Image (cartoon, rainbow, N blue to C red):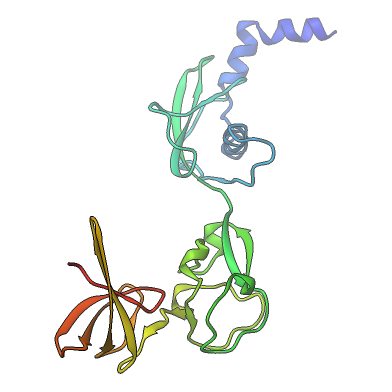
Length: 228
């Protein structure tokens, strides 16, 4: 019985019946999504979306559609296109827009924190989420958080974003600071008084013991690096 059915499908009449029907777009999109999912390991947390085809597009039914990535093969992230084609009974080739995203690390507060708190590693908890599920400015690099100061009080579990933190002052006006200058074969250390506030990486003027004003760059340690 099974052999007879297979034989019927291979007759010209069987092909004509298939060709008279239209291929279901939704089924095609599901298959395209599965094709893209197969490009990742089973443990991947990739999220795949295939955009619907133009509903006006009429594709003859295809018993075995094929799926492919247009050359050159795109990186499997962000926006891309996936190709779909039919070889028989009526050949066609179409492309659908798709997007692929994988979860990435971001950081949240482990405990409630007060405004003005300087963030340390023990304040942070790493979590994973897809970019489209995160608020704008969510920070994925802990080095962008360590040593920074909170602008406002935060509850435990708050996603840390750029707007919630500010650089911490490492030098205050009037503070006695160490000036360092180094080069091939020499290193000079002296002291001076800062003439303004500065965060790490900012330029600051310092008056040394002889009254000379020297400009340098504030370091995270509170010292000032001077270019010889």
